[in-house]
Length: 142
Image 1: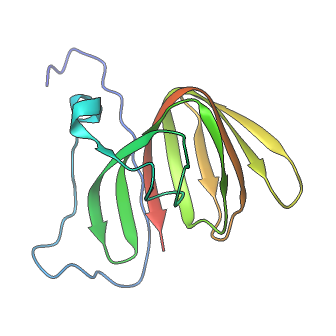
Image 2 (image 1 turned 90 degrees about the vertical axis):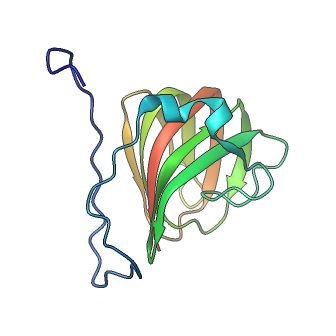
């Protein structure tokens, strides 16, 4: 890359006791924004890796790293709403769009916009309302 151009990085670490890779250990992986393009993603509306089934709301993703308790990738979703029941512990950084996350337990709702970083605890249940198409980088810890 050109060292005179600003670099935007998102760094996530999932600390866990076991390194479960069966081959060479992956310590660093760099993925470029061009790899977030729609043609690089897989339609996951009926079997979404983060939320199960988004129903009629189109979603797509690409998981770059999936070893042991950790998954890392990119996820996109078109406007719409869907319920999440007992989700995995998830961290994400919203790159584009606007969405609301509503907790089923207490009804609190948080507006998430590009640049926001969110942590959802294991077992989280609630609603995701995508207002403007979103794109996010995620990590899931099982």
